[in-house]
Structures are given as structure tokens and as C-alpha cells.
Image 1 (spheres, one colour):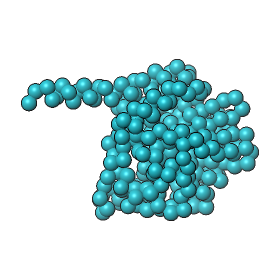
Image 2 (cartoon, rainbow, N blue to C red):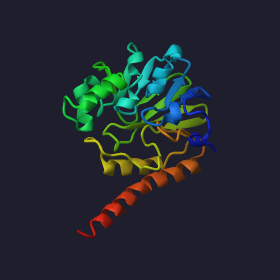
Image 3 (cartoon, rainbow, N blue to C red):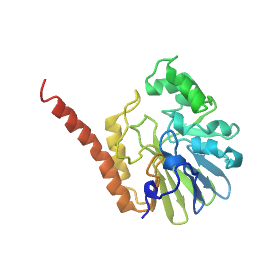
Image 4 (cartoon, rainbow, N blue to C red):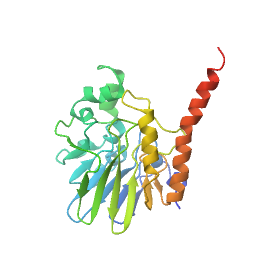
Length: 254
């Protein structure tokens, strides 16, 4: 059982972890925001990179090649390295695609007006470049890379189009969780396009999957036990109740 949050490597070190045909490209401090943990999946026919992060930007002197880019959702930290793959087709869920077509679409996902200060942050610190050529997928879509496949699991809540990816090779699986990140803070559903109800449903759906490995984009990193994953998922979900109970307590008196 491994939880890379406590693996002890130096905060500024960029760590790569091989796992069969997969390479986890850990961000600084195990993907603590604004960093993230990206995933390179190499098949016999094609190579895909999932959520190219600032950690990928930091590796640009040894940039991993990719034939396609898959995005769990359209937030600034998940597309920060996308500009390094201008020729590779990129894919996201159809519900989030407007966030890549132009910057105003991304601001709509957040609920910010055009001209907000955050626009400049996205451009300057996360290297946002529009991809009007973005292609879309829906729940259940599969990408066959040759000996390894990636299946889309639609898990809305964080955004309308947030997805997890089930990566299968030989008799093994890894579920890439994106921003279902299992942190002590709990689920984030504060954007205009977020939904608490959808997030709760997505968390429940993940309990039905059997996988050897689970990978979060932020903080927790690689988890190598389904039992440990379920324990962390329940603690993550329980933060919703904790917040709700706190609100009710605050409202109990004027």
C-alpha cells in the first residue's frame, strides 16, 4: 500500500514513476496546486498524455512525446502544458469543450466575467492557448493505444464535464481520478459549473470499480490498494456532511 503524499521526496524534485506502460509525471510537492500529477500512457500504436500540467512544462527539456492529449476537465492547471503539444489532437468531454475553444469559454465555466484579473493569470502563469480544434468524447468512449486502453468515465460535479479515465493493460487497471483528489479539504464544487449533487453521485459511482491503482491529480498521488482508496474516498465524501452540519450550526442562532 502506497500513498505518495508521505513518500518523503524533496519538495522541489520532479519524480517519474513507471508502472507497466504508464509513467506518472509527479508535480512538485506531489501535485500540490498549482502543480499536478500527469499521466503518460504508452501503447504499441500510440502514446497519450493525460492532463499535461505545470510539471510537464518543467520537463520541457525532456518533453515526453504524445500522439494525443486527454483532458479530465478544463481548468487552468490541467491544460498548462497543452501548448507544448500543438500538433497532437486533444480531447475533453463535450460539456467542457467551450473552455478550450476560447478564453471566454473558460471564464464561463468558472463564472467570471470577461476582463477579470484571473484571465491574465491563466494566460501568464498557466500558458493558456485556445484550441478551437478540440475534439470531444462522451461517457464510455474508449481509446485503444495498442495493448493498453483508456475508457472515459463521466464523473461530473467539479465541472459539468469532469471525467475519470480507466486505464487497462494486461490484467491490471489504474483509475485516473482527476480532481476527485481525496484531500482532507473535501470536494471542491465552487464554480458556476459545479454541482454538489452531481459530485455526490460521481463519488458513489467510483465505489463500484475494482482497480489495483488509483491516481489523483493533486496531493495524494498514487494509491495502490482498493481498500485504502475506499477509506480515503469515504473520508473525502464525509467533508460534505461536515460542512453542512457546520452551516446548520451557524444558522441555529441569529
